[in-house]
Amino acid sequence: MKTHDKKKILNQVCSAAIALGVSVSANAEVLEWTSGQLGGGWFTMASGVSNLVKDAYPDLTLKIVPGGGTTNPTKIDRGISQFGWGLDTFSYQASKGVVLYNNKPHENLMMVGMSFSDIFYHMVASENAKYNSIEDLLKNGKDVNIAVVKRGSSGEQAFRWMMEQFGTSYEDLKDRGFKINHGNFSEMSSQFKDGQVDYVFGGQGLPGAAMIDMGQARKMHLVNFSDKTLKGLNEKYGFLSGTIPAETYEGVAAANTIKMATTLLVGKNVSEDTVYKVTKTLCENNAKLSSIHASMKAFDCATAFKNAPAPVHPGAAKYYKEAGYM
Picture 1 (tube, rainbow, N blue to C red):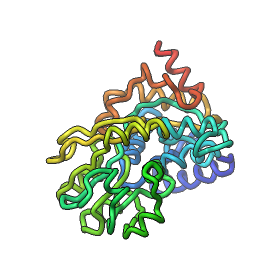
Picture 2 (tube, helix red, strand yellow; picture 1 turned 30 degrees about the vertical axis):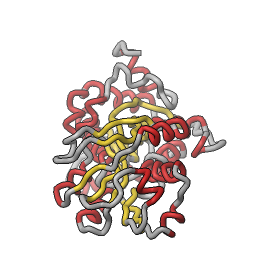
Picture 3 (cartoon, rainbow, N blue to C red; picture 1 turned 90 degrees about the vertical axis):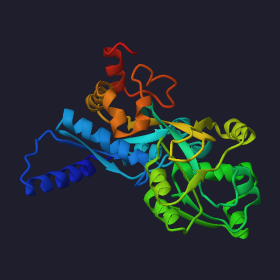
Picture 4 (cartoon, helix red, strand yellow; picture 1 turned 135 degrees about the vertical axis):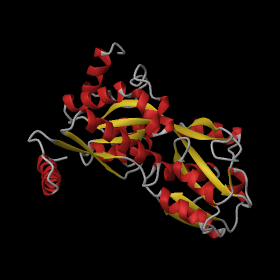
């Protein structure tokens, strides 16, 4: 973010605070954190961490905005956002300038830590939905109403790669009578509950808030991925395999699917002191993370910097070294 843009945001926040009678320090810092779709786990997780940072460092404000797994690395690289959630596969691709980011290495992209949660891709189906495997749905499905997360999100890109795996496309699906709606999790949940769609596809940590909401209003199940499909998606696109356990959602059986690890990305130009503070807050409040979102219990500062898909920011490395982890 350009200096004048940061000052503009800071001035707006300060003006609003003054109007409410809240005192603001001259050293206050306001930075943007690009998260996920409204109604999704990433937005909840980022908001919770932002509150922890604010409690520890009142002069540091992390403003949470919607984003997506494929677009967040570029927003951070360009300085539009300073922090953001990413996924290991896309973060690596962006850092190296390969696959989706072909010949465009994101040289300003760095990392605080990873494995804050595993993002599991859910294909939710209504109780009476006709197709009960990914293969059958995408290869043979006809006259299907489906909601897919917004374009530019990691989930939408995953859906594109799934279509490619089975030799199909949006155009082909529409020729077979598919009606495809793109939206955020709140919108997709409403469409499922109202019976506008019978399938919903997107990625969330476990348990997914939108999926809980859908299951409370309408009986559902999870569409399963076969071993052959999982192997193909791993070999060609790098997706990991995972299982959504039975009863993650009340009355819903286990299902095999694809997953990725959530990574906290940061811009190279964010100060070492600021990144140190955020890293310290995360590591010294580790026990509180699962209360923000159950999936965050997976985070471990002792291993957060290992197998990094992007360079570790010096501010984060400073804390890991001081704590004896690195």
